[in-house]
Length: 366
Image (cartoon, rainbow, N blue to C red; front, side, top):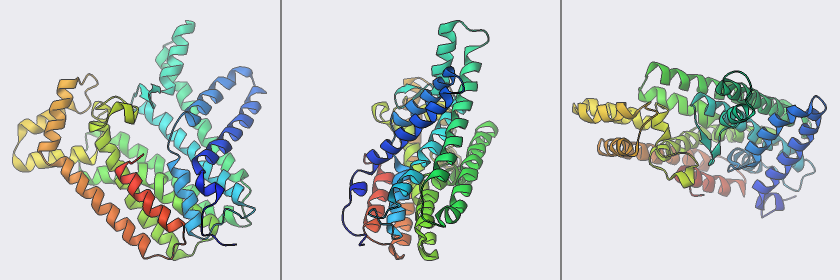
């Protein structure tokens, strides 16, 4: 059967991912009800988080990685592939719920974060102990539940014979890489490490690996792709994934909260050691511009950063050339990623969609 041309799963992939996730989460909720009805509070928080927004970027890359490696949406196992790649959204949920707690973020997608929501529940009921500690404990458990259910969902997917074994490498590596990247991020914030190399390493493993590179690798492995395709996917995925994070860093400082779902300047308040910050401080040192460096460092990690101080930090980042440097890095990474993809035997329509996804991920045109 030909892999070319439109197909229902291709045309409405995010909606199909939503459908599969909703069904899975509903079935797992029934299980926890049998333990104790109150446990459903945690399951409902996870379901609300997963189904309450998101671009479904990771399953999208995995799907088109599978399609580009010869996967056919008309194949009897296509629904199983859909289930396997949808589990990536639960890995994402784990990372975000824990990340929000570590960063003390109050909102996500315009709504209270999980730890804030449960802290409010604690306070409203007048329970004993600090509400914040309860909220943190539940957020850790909800994130862990997402990780466990992701693993269950992936391994329960009805894939072709040998596919689970082939996909074990990217699945295993992806989870270790994202947790390692999270640790490096926490360490950099605590130690005050503002080296550009540190920021790029964090971007590579905290974001790129589990956002683009490993989802593509996963799709390719399920399809039984040849090594040349896997290598091209990994190069493309690493570069586009880092470029995606760099765009996110710019949006974290300059983005519209109505679009990002988070308060303007939150990355600065959280003290994130991004490439944007690293590039600014390096340029300030090279120029001997202590005033600009002090503006940036004063904003970094200041939880009470107000609009005026944010504007001063934005101006300094722009005037030091850090914004331009990050934009140039995004362009270079995107170019190298597309070169790698172009040189590989990737099947249509996967090839065309991966080119389009590179544009959307790095320009954030959605």
